[in-house]
Length: 82
Image (cartoon, rainbow, N blue to C red; front, side, top):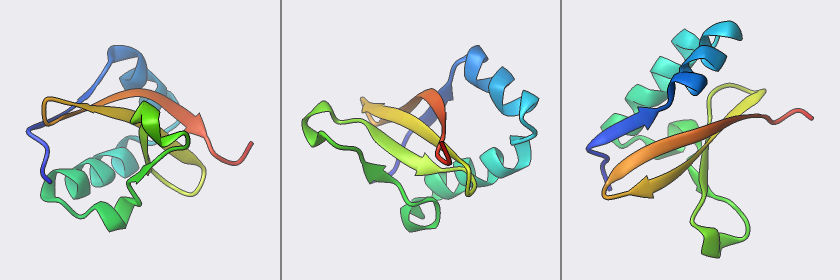
């Protein structure tokens, strides 16, 4: 599986910038675009019937996303350590 596009909202972009995650997020995004899903640990969340995925930005933050028409849409960044 390869994604045509990875889309984040302006709210997500501001959050990434405010937490100084820009370079780590860009690196994770490149891995996803190239199909290296194990590098960012792309996984399906429970309950699996909701089809919500998450991937690792760094040890602390995870990005929650959905796949729509071969497009990965990020809708939330979650603090995994809490």
